[in-house]
Image (tube, rainbow, N blue to C red; front, top):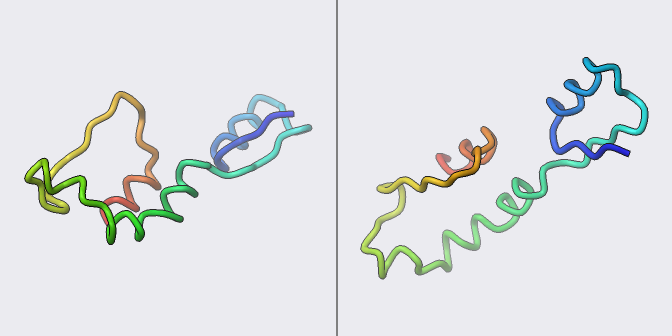
Length: 75
């Protein structure tokens, strides 16, 4: 069984000739972000001690940021 987070992942497997046992299950991190972003925007106080204002800073990580996450974060 192969569990794919995106349609792109499924298509890549199809191009490699793998079609059996492939399941599109969604991207757990994107789902969690969509579920909780409004709550975080309303309740989070993390920016206060850092003297930051919403949409006036960038967050850099070592991981690739999926396009859908970037779209959610930029509104």
